[in-house]
Image (cartoon, rainbow, N blue to C red; front, side, top):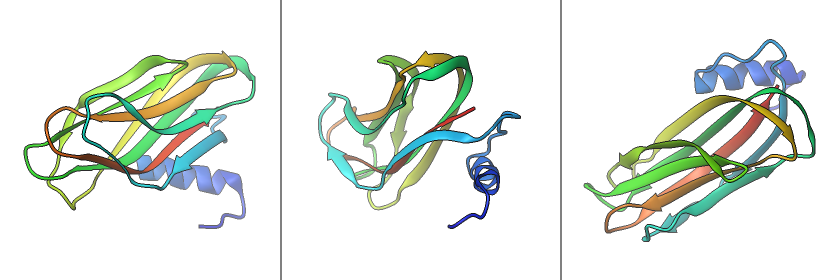
Length: 141
């Protein structure tokens, strides 16, 4: 979509991810990876990374989103988000049958400053293949 004003885009994104933006809620920085990545291993794989320039010290809202599936039923995919190498969310493994993607969204408020590196990672916790696509990372504040 093309928006005439950034505020209109931000409001739509907030509705889509089910979040309430802070009163200063403009998207400051964002990154996305529309590619599909697969893994069969338990080692964490980074799907997308957002590195900011130096941020002023204050509270920021960070949102993550992606689509996840597995090669077949009874397969499990783990998802986690890290800020400067520290895990900020680590959800229960997601189970989904192959071919059907499930969207995941996360929203977190953190006090941040300086250069911030955010990444979204996934792994396979059972046999089979775990698949992630269409991930987004955003800092709002």
